[in-house]
Length: 160
Image (cartoon, rainbow, N blue to C red; front, side, top):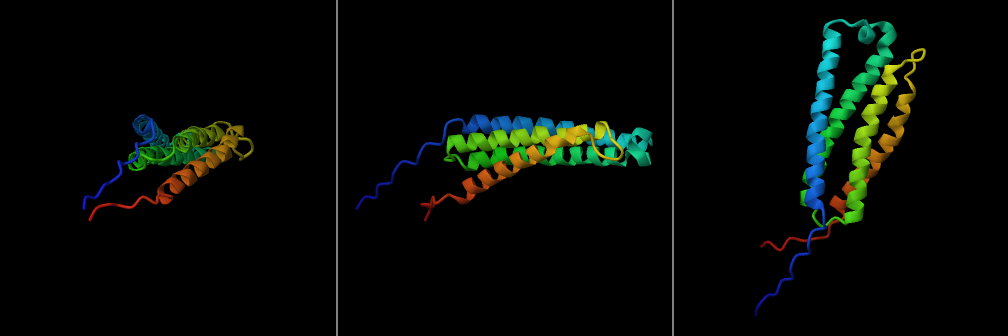
């Protein structure tokens, strides 16, 4: 008795392109945010008042958050790129939306924290910090959609 197996479904178009985009963006933005971390270390090491004065504690916090979130989101873009290769059958429209949301979060969250620290108003961050909540929402959507794509698979292995 011969056993016929169906041809595996074709991957969604654009998986390779999206993966390369997130690899490029992830690694280059990682370089940018690690450089920002070195600048912050230099400001601290040279005891620059703009960064270390007690009146600048909000600025220091905002810029540290910009560095930390930018670094984390950069690494998350690299992880997303690798995940795309493991999820070739993820529906193109859903994958594209998750991709755009992740890229938006990478832009909005660190930028919001950084701009929030540029101009301090009586100990409160500047208006730039208003970019953070939309960025956080985009990050939530991207992670939710990616988690659903990973967990929604009912594909079973044919390996014996």
